[in-house]
Length: 200
Image (cartoon, rainbow, N blue to C red):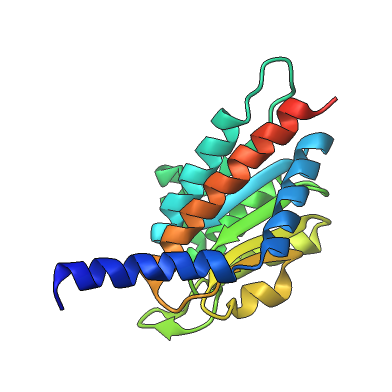
């Protein structure tokens, strides 16, 4: 395949995702995050691999880009950013508990957990089933009076079934799903910034 054909195929996929994605799910996630800001609740974001990078980026953007002069600040934490803490928890408590153990320090009723995963916890590889630490984190939020939100892809996986709202990128390739998760996080961040700016 020539470069031109590959480029066209890849970008045509992005266009098709934008056509197919469920906009009502995007709206629901925006409303939950706006509600967290209104009520002064914390938002915890986490993911694995490329989704960990997106979680860190998303948290940074929410904290920075929604900081409007004269308005209270949003409270967002990425649970992937402290390498010493993450590695200590992995060493002592196992990778499957790396997010729940952090949430135990801070999570309170009404807080929000937002997990990003390409497959949403379905499928497995050499280490076993994928993203079980993410599902445990979402379950912890639900079990402790919080809100569970997801960004997924493919068919949404288990994450789609266990969250209050889940945006599923309707595509079956990892690069398309991860790429579009970044599109979504920017859309949501800048819409929240507008809502906060316009708030009474």
